[in-house]
Image (cartoon, rainbow, N blue to C red; front, top):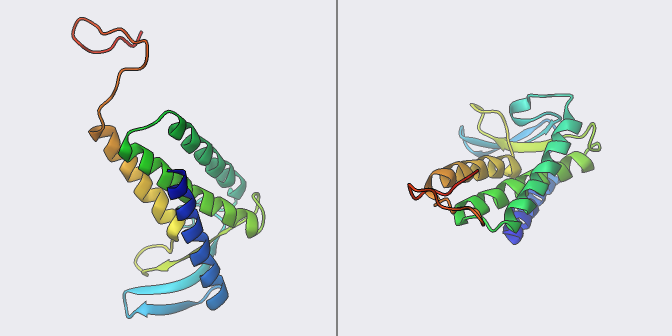
Length: 162
């Protein structure tokens, strides 16, 4: 799971590096006519340009997300929740690196480059965070809940959570 998180972070950073190198900031290039453009937009806020001016808070949230992922890995989660946590952590780490590199954790921004014109521009990290969160949500319904160590079963067969 750690390798998955680091792999997503690497793909995110490499794609952003390519965009910054090949596309001037604030401009777009068509990739699929009338469907997809690659753009170089700097976003100092959260998804969809919200929370502008809160870059420090967002950097802290990303750091907490990565730490939470490590806590999940230690407790040996189910397959989907573990993969979901790794994907979220990879995206959070990618955007955290971006904020630090592009202005510092307090005033930094991320490079958003996937542009479909009917939706705000986003990046690989944003996609990973969304997909990972959906995996965790699905896992919460699909994965069997194991009783915690030391829990005594109740008369109805359910573990005692007292």
